Length: 272
Image 1 (cartoon, rainbow, N blue to C red):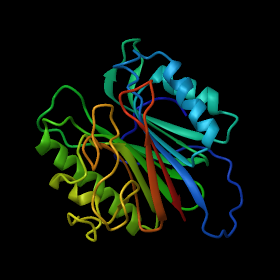
Image 2 (image 1 turned 60 degrees about the horizontal axis):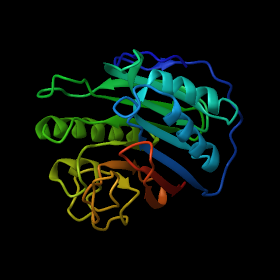
Image 3 (image 1 turned 60 degrees about the vertical axis):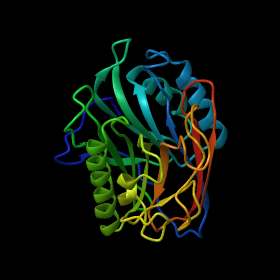
Image 4 (image 1 turned 90 degrees about the horizontal axis):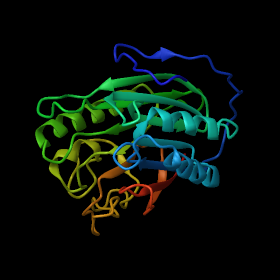
């Protein structure tokens, strides 16, 4: 799939080969969220893409959500993963990387992508960078996966609107019968009130949404390991998330520091 913007007015269909589906018992699968810092730390260079590809080839996650990806890095990942059963989509957000390629989010799924959309997120404060949420619908298992990167910490009001949008889309997808995964850099720690719409009401603090986050006990305290190099414990420094709808169970996660980004690899497990 080519790197290009997609209108939020509708989903674009892409040709795929569809394998027959069969009934399955609940199976544990692996998922990955990662902010690559592809421009800030690498200027579009593909070394970081090779490092991510190595991790994906090693653990074979079902869904990979990526932020701060340059077009050159997306192309390298597609090339590396072409023979590993992955399909993908990319969603530019507006800026360009230092090497002139487009910049934004990307998703890789161990499946075939049938439709995708690159939704614009609300902007009321930060004029420097548009924000978007990229979503793909897989051909099998009636699932939708999204990747997003929200506005920076100082823009709390704007980020709150973006979170409300993401939570609303997740609810719409689930109401239509889809399992939903949303991964991304939310630039918000788990106990902040503005992220309430992402969490189910059974959590503490109480959420106002219907999703479950992989790196805290289901319906327990909203917490998780730090996902940045400058974070602490107990939720401090956790700004990267993998949220799952109610069709997933046995959630767990591990944030793994790496040398290629100031963010950590957020590995999750979930059964469905």
